[in-house]
Image (cartoon, rainbow, N blue to C red; front, side, top):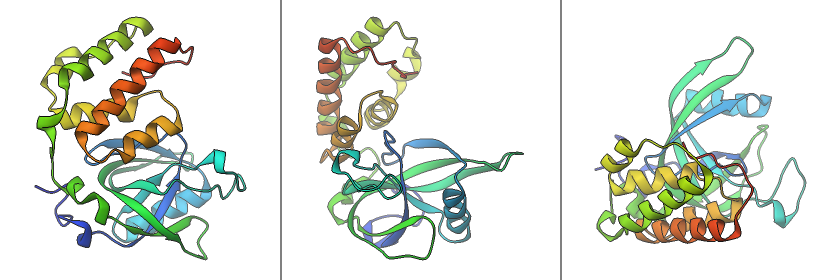
Length: 222
């Protein structure tokens, strides 16, 4: 099984992609990410992507590493997504949805005449991302659900438990990671986890640490 027709492995994906640095944004394979695009440089990026393969790379800026606010250093691992929904608003914004294809490692950033950034990337370290539901049998589902129940109870959240119970392990773990209210470092650790089992373990550990700390941040799990 492949993420999208035509993307069955690393060799099928473009080696040069536009990247969208966005703090706290975590896209994972087969995950869905809605985006509200309004900056001119990213409107141009979407225009160009729609004219070609519709692929952009979501990546977090590494704000602790310094560099200028306009060109922050980037984490080395991101996730490529394909624009699968697109709409224009009356005030010049684009509303899009990205569907995750596979993670990539940045090999270099290219000098470019475009207003947005472009990188040479490799998907070779993440070949299993192209296999839907790979590694599901290793996930501690009960541990994930317990951590979620504890988080929901402490933060007085409402969740669709019926939908959660029906979700396969990959969809469950990746959706919870993507929607989690944790910081950039924690989300990067989830992104860079070598397999689904490890990603679930990171999610559980981060959630348990957050509960112990009694964080006052506003949770966003829905």
